Length: 129
Image (cartoon, rainbow, N blue to C red; front, side, top):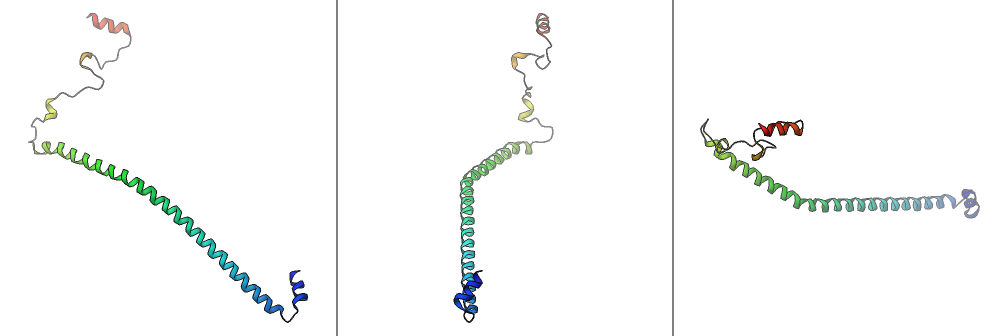
């Protein structure tokens, strides 16, 4: 429909020239839209990267603290292991002289602290003996 109106208004001699000009304008407009779209996407990616870098910079301080703590723990373990490395085999160490604590036991619990008690009556029987 648009072609028929253009043929009547412009005439058959100038119609090919008008079509070429319209095609160039349309191509230029499409390239401009494509360039704008690419620039917009590039800016959005740049903003996302900035946010990621900001998060990494925030976490950098925490990472440094973790690394420092790891180094401190490693040096403490090395210091604890160094006296044990120089001792002859079978020699008592500071850990051999102290009795190993029993989980859940207290000094006042006595020898039956680890044994489960079935009822209060059993506990009363044990106290009588």
